[in-house]
Length: 365
Ligand SMILES: Cc1cc2nc3c(=O)[nH]c(=O)nc-3n(C[C@H](O)[C@H](O)[C@H](O)COP(=O)(O)O)c2cc1C
Image (cartoon, rainbow, N blue to C red; front, top):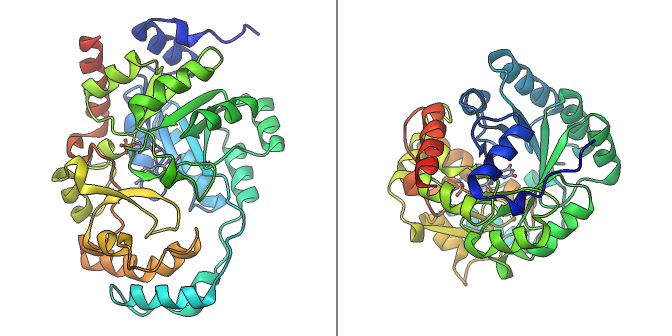
């Protein structure tokens, strides 16, 4: 087998084309795998336009993962990836503090039953099995690196591994663990921040303009680097490629497309959001993520509010409020993930968006 090319030594357009050739794409644009917001029709549209479709499988059962892959394969021969979260250590429980949190949350939604946080998360090992069995061209990770036995099995099946990182140290760790590509996620990004350490992200909030060239300089001679966070138009795609990225990963900017089919109040809030209208918060899940700074986010982020419980306990405790908000169409209590460039999200069909971004970027380059 030929050694992988040195992507960091190539000029931007040649680098993007080399990445596309290596990964079976026609545009260096990856749909972010978004847990709860990566329906098959969105991945089909992105893959059909030549980008990479994505499945955020965190909350999916093994059967749902297999069914998602079947549906995408039935409608496109474009490439797609499946993504899992590497589990954090079991959370420390504090019943007295959880009581304070339940009281706080009951001001925003229905009463929160004490036992709600005892629910076991989905089984990571079974999700990995389903993912390997589905056999996508690419799998990706966030919040850490896959265990060595999973990496070995991926490599045996010829599946490539994209590892999300938020610091240079994490990029080095991911490459040492066998990652074929690193996705440098800047703090502009919508949704959860992929820090390997659950408690660390608040003190290592690095913007993409600093993170991306630093990651390229550290590992770019061995693996291609994908840029994620705040990219929503051709300017952003071109800037990322100039800073050393081989491709970009886009989440928020795809969320208003018809195929994403998110709740209307969330889509409307994205349209009106300036960068300062989003905020990092642990108040939905216990893990840090960037969302629209709604009334609940502001209240829960305030210094007098009880500190959120660790992931996934906080997610279980906040579920009754989030569910009620969805049913009522109430943006103030809804979990409305959003990156800092939310205002760039457009309502055009996803395939058109992918084609437009790539043609705008090529013109600029
Ligand atoms: C609604 C939503 C859900 C997300 N879920 C995941 C996930 O399950 N796994 C993952 O690796 N990244 C997830 N992300 C992060 C994206 O992969 C990506 O880093 C981010 O969307 C890039 O920033 P942008 O939203 O500004 O484009 C999510 C992002 C959003 C907006």
